[in-house]
Image (tube, rainbow, N blue to C red; front, top):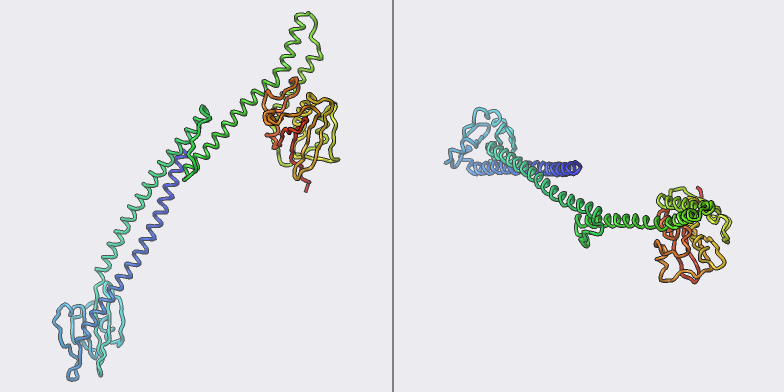
Length: 422
């Protein structure tokens, strides 16, 4: 329905524009044709008047015509001298108007019904002579009406043709769009690696193909993130479950009760893992969110042997639970690999706060600084949530986290600084 509605709107708009253009052209052409026919009628009247005036002369004190061999002129041209008609036959319907023009004594043009009357003064010394000619406007008006009718017919056909062409063009264009959208949807479900790969966009369809390629890329990345999250969950939850199973089997074989402390410890680890993974899935940075980084660091340390070197007051634009979920796994990772010391510092860097989590362990191999955030490559004894989940939380909350290979354990977390209240 949406596609059909869009097609109708485009066709309707095309027809509306075509109608407006045709109407303007018809009006303009009719006005121009009217002016041309009026000019032709006036030119004909002047030509007739000059032709008759050339035959009028003074002979023996009387105004006479030197020649008048055309009887046709008698019906369309009349000569008056001193108020009297000396040549031509004036139709009864025009007598009053012609005599009025003859007595006016000046050249002028008037319209009477379907006729154009032109009065021209003849310069003859001692006499008042006028020649009056008539031009029938009926042929000109008929020509204008026929031209207007033809213009309206052609304009109507043009509007219909424009609407039909717009319908076909839009239908064909939308069919291509529909096919591309259907292919993109099918690829996103079954072949996320497929792309249109139309190259540099040269038209709207090229831009659509590029947009759909980007959409498919995001779908592919989302599916990869989903698979990666599944791997991370399996990786992080397998160890405590294995420990719980081993304790239960050991108790079953020995006939002794399951050690309560061990069970509670592993259950706590499971709860922490699930809570943090949920935070990773839901973490977002909302406008106005802020927390005291020193307080969040103390919660993350939770009695661990970690040194803290923070400025007196440091506020970041992330929620406190997100900051704790970021720092706690990093501290666990540092404690597993440190020889004797783990410490955490914070420093201002423009509009960001950079937190460094450091330990005096062997540090990261320069070739593996990017891979340490992949599931299964964190090393250690399997405690904590590991760097992969840290990366997920950081990406969701708009925080940058990276490992630094400088001969010691060093992870740098860049958080947005909280803006001062207005």
